[in-house]
Length: 82
Image (cartoon, rainbow, N blue to C red; front, top):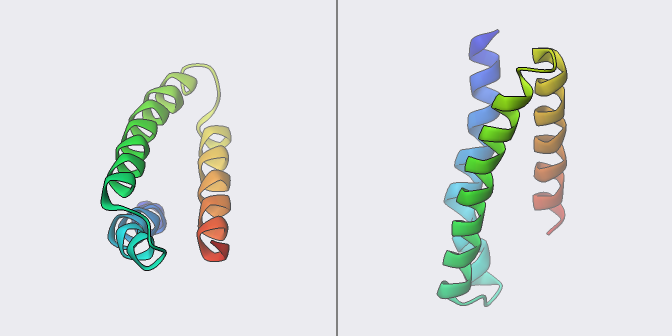
């Protein structure tokens, strides 16, 4: 089960980390703008980790994990259509 969880979470992170600059360059977005987008993404990632870790004190793990998986699925679908 832990292997499955790690594999599903790592795919999105590696995919976004390796491809967002190439997709941005192909779309004609400036490097400074892409760097700003990546910085905000890293900041958002860190804040979400704190929020979800704090939520574990009040809600069961399955509920928190369902929210995280749902947001990842929506994110992957949005990347596909952009």
